Image (cartoon, rainbow, N blue to C red; front, side, top):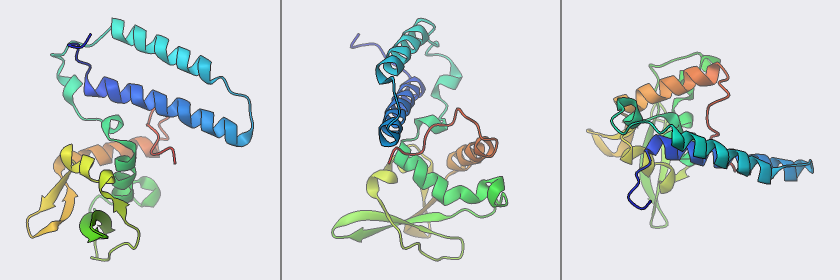
Length: 179
């Protein structure tokens, strides 16, 4: 079992199922409604087992394509904040892409969005919300300013696809965050 590789997409899918179970459990507790968390976990384990029986070949070219579900939840939130203009609900403007700037605060790296007009948002996010986006190749450093990052071509395509699905109210989209 130690040598068995599981694709990143499959692992991300399983994590998303777990997030859904935890989110539903938390919501039920807040609303004081009945819940069947054990049943949800059991159904998820059975589904994962059956999924493993029909495992995709590691040579499948789609197995390595990056999908929205593979982006960590806090990083998804950052990406959606940078690209909400891509949504039809906001006028669908792909000519506007916000950027993100790194700065130091109390000795730690923080990030804040810089809009198309160069204005900085007051709210900032932790390094852990942005570094995965750089590691996945969704953000790239701008050549004229090493402190500012923008969407890469991969990031641009992934965000466009996300907003198309979001505008259609796609129920298969992963949750942004459980906070």
